[in-house]
Structures are given as C-alpha cells and as structure tokens.
Length: 362
Ligand code: NAD
Image (cartoon, rainbow, N blue to C red; front, side):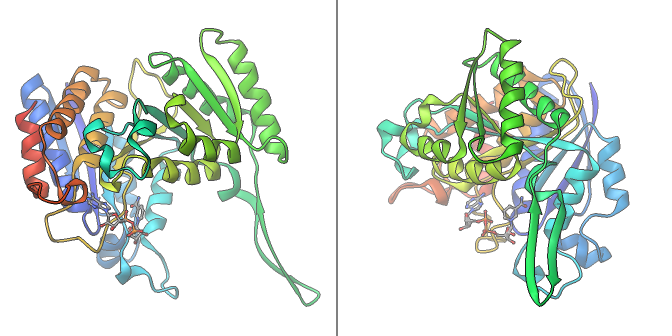
C-alpha cells in the first residue's frame, strides 16, 4: 500500500509529539510491509511567523491531495496579542472547513493502571469506554447572523444555532455506523425542551434509530448528559451531539482519563465509508502546552493513539491500529510513565523513551 501522509507539527510540544507519532507509523510500515510517504507543512503560529498566515493555500492543497493528516498542536503566548491580524487557531478552523471535516471523534477509555490520575473514584472509572462524536461544521459557531450590532444607542450581540436535516442526518448516521461493532448503543444529546434546532435533531435521530433496530438509541438533554458523564460514565457507548454541546462535553469527558496527554482524536470528512477509508485529520486533544515545550517531557500517547485512528479510519488498516493500541496498553500496564501520569517515586520517561517503549512492545 502506497500512502501519502501530511504532518502538521505546529507549535509548542506539537513537533515533539508528532515526531514520535511518525516514528510509530514508520515502524508499522516496516513491520506490515506498507509504503508511507510523509510530507511536513507549517500550521499555526510557526506558519504565521514564516508566511504571515496560519494556513497557506499550498498546505491546504497538499492536505486535500493526501490520504491523511497527522497534526500536533497550535498556539502559544507569543501569538496571543489581541491586536494581531490573525491567530494560530484560524489555521485549524481553515483546515476543518477546507477539508469538509464535519465529524470529530474522541474515544475516552481510561486505563485501569492509571485510575489514580482520574479525579473520579476508581469504581466510577471502571469499565468506561465510550466515544463522543461532535458535529464540527454547523451550529452556533457558524450560524448567521452572527456579530455585534449598535442600534439606537444600544449594543446587541447575536449568535445563531442552525442545523439542516442533511447536516444532522450525516452525523447521526455516522454514530450508528460506529456503534455497530461496539456495544451497539447511541446516546443522542440535545436541548429539545428549549431549542428548535434540537427538536429537529431529535426527530431525525429517532427516524434513523427506527431504521437500525439492532442499535439501542436514547436521547439525553445536554445538561443531564453533563451530569451523567460524571455520575455514571460507564453507561455510555457512542454519544453524538452538535458542535457547541460537543465542544463542552468532550473536554469534560477528557478529564475522566487523568491527563490531557493521553487522548487522541479524529476529524473526518464525507463520505464516511468504513470499507474505503476517508480523508481525516488526526491530533491529540491537548494544546501546544507552552509550559513544558522544549523539555522533552510531553506525553506522546495522545499522538500515537491518533496515529492508530489514522490507520483505522483513513487507511482502513485495523490490524495495524490494533497493534499500536495493544502496545500502548502494554506499556502502561508494565509501568511506563511520562511525568504527567507518574506517581511519586515512579521512574519518569522522556517523550522519546515512552515512544521507544511502545515501539518495543509492537
Ligand atoms: P494545553 O492542552 O496545551 O495544556 C494544558 C495542561 O496540560 C498544561 O499543564 C500542559 O503542560 C498539560 N499537557 C498538555 N499536553 C500534554 C502532554 N502531551 N503531556 C503532558 N502534559 C500535557 O492547554 P492550554 O495550556 O490551555 O493551551 C496552550 C496553548 O494551546 C494555547 O495557545 C491554546 O490556544 C492552544 N490550544 C491548541 C489546541 C489545538 O491545537 N488543537 C487545543 C487546545 C489549546
């Protein structure tokens, strides 16, 4: 298999963790007999410094022409000036829009050996294994009108929550497809008691549910879901929700695991076809962590598990993805720890040592 992967290391710890993700993919290519060609491009703050913009057309075109994109993180205090013409995050939004990435997937599966790192009691964390699917290109963040208006001496600010039936259908259908090989349970999250867009969402989710009787569908209001994520997180399998609700719930869900450094994500475009693979951007859920950048102590596991998702969803290489995930589990089981997940007295590994430990176990 001959495959082109664009890497966008970005800022802060982005390059440190992306480097290790690439090494893991190179090892997989050698072990399983694939050809992966990597091409590195700039995104975020480093791209602003080099070219004046956080995402160039050339980078976007390269991503469009590739099979998959592995991203580190963007941002940092040096690009935070509110008077600046542009910001690193504009590059991320441009990438999502430019590639039509409408679905963000975040699996949440705390490792039993790291239960101490979670803010929840170990008995609450036991058995937690769910995936949140967040709609990424619609809803409150993109609806029009949006803005600030001055009228008759008064100031008004407006945002619009808007969804079409087609937007809801494609994301809910994806949730059902992903639930099938899992525990076959979809929780659709909305605010149907207040919002018209949520009532349409619930109506469409119910229709799709009827067409998939083998999958159990339930509906939760977003406020109830926020509570249940803390009270009984093990009850969830696949959660699907709109953009802003997903933005908030995914960060809440991430905390269950204990470190920002552990979790991967995938952002997928259309058409999603589990048999063919789809163009996607894969990145750890953490940011550029300027407080630890350049110290070689960042945890690379979020990026390495993102590389596994890349193999599974964009390249349709499930066996290879499983091999990475099993090696990560084994490394954690056998006591490999970076600083963010170590308990006092445990030996702490560098970013490179953790990646080496995972590669050894593949
Ligand atoms: P952050 O995720 O960068 O860091 C939060 C905390 O988690 C920090 O203490 C950090 O040291 C720690 N951490 C994060 N990743 C880690 C890893 N791999 N290993 C060990 N520890 C890790 O969030 P922040 O500090 O709020 O944001 C820093 C910058 O990143 C900001 O400029 C923000 O805008 C940007 N950001 C970018 C993305 C992205 O690129 N997708 C996401 C979130 C934040």
